[in-house]
Length: 282
Image (cartoon, rainbow, N blue to C red):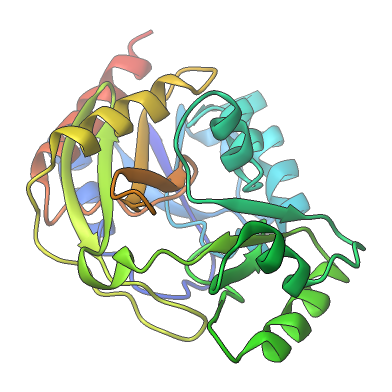
């Protein structure tokens, strides 16, 4: 097999990138197929290149996922590379980006076992609304929006999460409701397109727009965020929204298994296939 497309045995939601990706790889002459990372029977050495795609259950099994990625990287080209996956799996990367001068959504990391109170964070930061979520998370998993008058529920949620894992507390950005969160897709050196995503929390579905115009500030931030990463990338998705001053800030920098919205941006699909061709030829 030329390309193993890593997924999971039970998808939590549909993967709209899957069909166009398989068709494009076949049209380019590559033998490709989806294999589940959490299927112990899979022999990953069969694939010359393993592309992380819909491994969307990994936040529930982060250690097992990282261990699996390490094993795969020894027998197959892994994209994005193992070091990038290890860095990106925990959302402390947002603090790393901020330390490198990249504007990110205001974020507080609460470490596992900490008794730091949500109210203390809100008062110290001057926030009246916050989002509480696991530091290893995807697709709104156990994500709670804590608005005015909901401090008690937010505190309970923080205590439940912090008892078993690291937690992020982030300032809620009202811009995600009107302007919306913008997801910029970057493939092998170029931003190809962007979509508007609706905000979602635990149990909610996500709505995604058609391709949208990208502002100069958004494009510049996307390139700055990607340039701050150590190591070669094949793909990235940079989710952003206007911050408190109206300028865009990074909400997420997705380097493991992001949807790349191929139906909205065929150019991204073409660049990804060509990027795979280049890496297989090395």
